[in-house]
Structures are given as C-alpha cells and as structure tokens.
Image 1 (cartoon, helix red, strand yellow):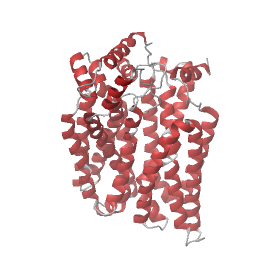
Image 2: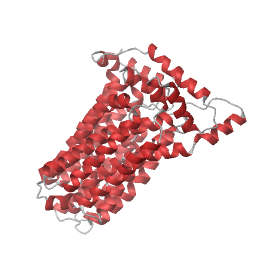
Image 3: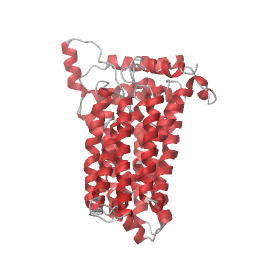
Image 4: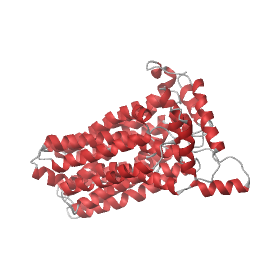
Length: 490
C-alpha cells in the first residue's frame, strides 16, 4: 500500500490539485510556479525535448500493441473458425481470454511496476507481447491459440498501468495530461490498424505484424531513461537527478523540480495506512458504489462484444464486412479526440449521461435493424440501419462512458485507499468485460435483435445510475471530492 500511495504523491506535488491515478487517467494539473520571463522561456524551451518525445513514443508503442490485440478478432473470426474448425464456443473463449488475462494483469501490475521499475516492466511486456503473437501465428489448434490470447491479455493488463504511469512521471506537469492521453489515442489507433490490415492479410500474417511494434519498443527502451520519480522512490538520488536532467535537457536548471519531488516523498509518513478490512469502512461505501458501479457498467454496455466481433455483426446484418469495418475504424479516432476536448469543458457527469443516451440510440437502431431483417421488413435498408446504429455507438462511447467513467474513478478515492480500491475497480471492469466478450456470440445466436435491446437496457440503467448517484467532479479539488464522498453516509 505504501508503494502505491507513493506513486500518487510523486505524480503531483500539490495536494490541492488533481492527480494522475495509477491507471493513467488525468485531471487538472497544478500551474507552473511563478518565475521571471527568462526562466519561463528556458522552461518552455526545455519542456519538450527530443528525449522526452522519443521516450513517449517508445512507451506508447505498447498502447498501440494492446489496441492491435483488441482489434484482432473482428476481421479474422470467420477465417480462424474455418481453418482451425472452431465452434462458436471455442472462438468466444479465445476472444474473451483477453479480458481474463487482463484481470490478472490488473492485480499484479502495481506491485510489479514498483518492484522492478517502469522501464523494465515495459521491456517485459514487450517480450510477452512477442511470445503471445508468435503463439497465435503458429497455432494449429485451440489450445495454443488460447494461450497466446491469454498472454496478450495478461501483458496488456500490466502495460495498461505501466505506460501512463511512466509517461506521467517524466513529463512536465503543464503538459502531462496531453501526453498521458496519448495512451488512449494509441490504443484506438491500434484497434483501427488491426481492423484495416486484417481486411487484406491472413490471420497468421496479421498476428506476425502485431509483433513489429513490440520489437521496436523492446529495442528502443534501451535508449530511454528510467522514471525519475521511481528512482527517487528507490533512494537512487544520483540516478534520479541524471534521469530528470536527461528528460528536461542539459542546460535546464532542475533544482526546484527535484526539490519538489523530494518534498512530496517526505509526505508519505503522514499518510494514514489502511488495512483490507478498513478499506470497506462505511465512510468509503459511497465511493465504492460509484467506482464499482461505473467500472461494471462501462464494460456491460457492450463495447468489447461490438469491437471483438464487429465483422460477424456486419455479416449477420447483411452488410459488407469490408465497408463496415473501414467505416468503424474511421469513426473511432475522431470520437476519442472529441471526448478528450470536451471532458474538461463540459464536465464528466453530463458527458457520461449524453454518451449513455447515444449508446442507447445506437443499440436500439441496431436491434431494430436485426428485428426488421428477421421479419423481412425494410429488407433493403435494414443493413444500412444496422451500420448507422453501430457507428452511433462507436461515436458516443469515448465521449463519456469510455473516458469519463475512468476519470471519475480516478478522482473519487482518497489517496490512502486509491491503490487498493482502484485495483478492485479494475478487476470488476475486467470481469464484466469477460462476461460481455464471452457471452456475445452466444447471445447473437440466440437473438441478434434481443442482444442489442438488452444492451440498450443496460445503457438506460447506466444513464439513471449516473443521474442519481454519480457526483460531478469537474472544477473541484480532490480534497473536496473526497469529503463529499465520505460525508454521505457518515
């Protein structure tokens, strides 16, 4: 617990400002200290250095790799099932093992990253990505296919924590949010790349292509520094200053920033330690309800099912798989960018409700399209209605439910329980994602229209849950948010 709290303190040296949490979700960061024009000019010139940009690039290659994993199943489902003679149950297990591995990765990621360092964890995850993709590419049956998928999920669960934390720990505080959010953007780019490349390559070739970014990353990591804050946590003062100087540039005075980081580390002794039993104290109950509820609902609205099996959805709807996949890939990235822009302007709560309403419309339209198809009504346009519904869903998910829920979860837990409570929320999210990804194909065989109407119902419940229980955190300090959460049932 102490190591988990230390990560939080070292990410931000001002307790009155928002923090970057362990999952890398960003909030409002403290303003730059006042200085004369000369020092500000020097700081601005040094804020973005070649080493900083190169380090961010190498780190987020892991984000791209995980996005490629997420998008892999959609374009290759029919080909894999035919070549390896897999049943629907076997392919559903293959797809869902990503979230099973991710759940375990979410449990061990914090301790592992603190124990061996952020940089070594990224090397380790790159290596496991390579082994996982290779196992899939040479598999002749379900067991090796499943093992590779599980390995990719496990390493994705670890890298999903390590990458944003590493980036947050070496980027300047005035630019931290923009650099950290590149993690989310690169996951989306990876998903889109898998969709598009999968249309023109075999499933084995696509798996081998997935190895390339990990190979580049594992080599590039040898040329980037370790996180300065982690080095400080380990008591390596000389290495800490050398790494910080490397990121900021050789001619920049890092004395004040280094002192701030050291001072924040000293605050650890004043943090209240919380046991597992105390984690479920009454004063934390409201935060757990909101955090666990958002974690579960963010997955149960069905994104993994739609992304994992988009190809089969379009095929079932009678729409061109290639056209639908290209359209889906084209919609994802602009939607994520829009969500990033709006999140701190409009607030988390209203955006999540708007997003949930949009998801309801998308699921309802898709369900109606399948219903029309089943009853041979509007047969000529029902495939187009299904495509429109899916695109609406993909457009609205990142605007609120995708990003807003994660940010609120990062803000509602007090610092002394953030690590453990965040792990619980991550496991709930992974298990909920597994339920969706495993059951989706079976549900589609039961009733395509019914599947999307059920998801539409979950979207309505999400909207009500947020409207009734979730507080707005925009414009509040973490202390104000935590007091609000703890005072509800005191």
